[in-house]
Image (cartoon, rainbow, N blue to C red):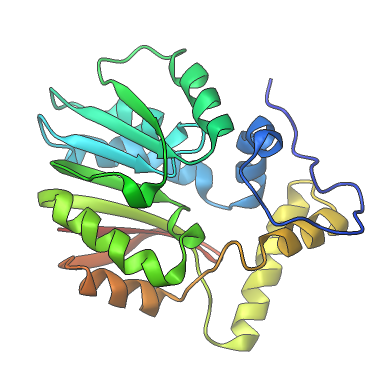
Length: 242
């Protein structure tokens, strides 16, 4: 049974910066589904994407894999032979739980779990790379470096999936979309206290950018095309093609 996220349900005098620790790992499936509108739709669509873009004998990278949900979704859609998935996360708790969870599913596509910094992982011979709500936690000044390295490691026709919480330039529209996101969280059972404390914990930890900033950086990194394929409020999933 999925553990319920109540990590911010008790008032705290000091709210600590958000971290992917053991407490978060224990409730992460519930947390992300109740916090990120559209997340389940991304997972639903990943097998379809994998079936169309993953090439025989290539690698798939899941950078910032958390519990491996994206890796498992992709495994379900891979039709090509000789494919391997490399799933990377800095959190020991996430990697350990991902190993336990992925082992429960039978698949001909192996997943190599790597505990490490996504900035340090070599990207080689890839046909699909996933950054599912990962780039937003990378220092802004290093994001181009990561994207350029991913682009260099993609095969021709390879695809990068980038899912992000975005910033809206117009202040009034940004406020409206923020409240719509909070309405989503309220509908999932989060209290005003939980919403406020979670938001405070993410300040300066999760740094969102605008769609224009994302597109400009992807072009600078060498991607020839970038399009939004899924969006709900300020949560956007993009596909960039090598």
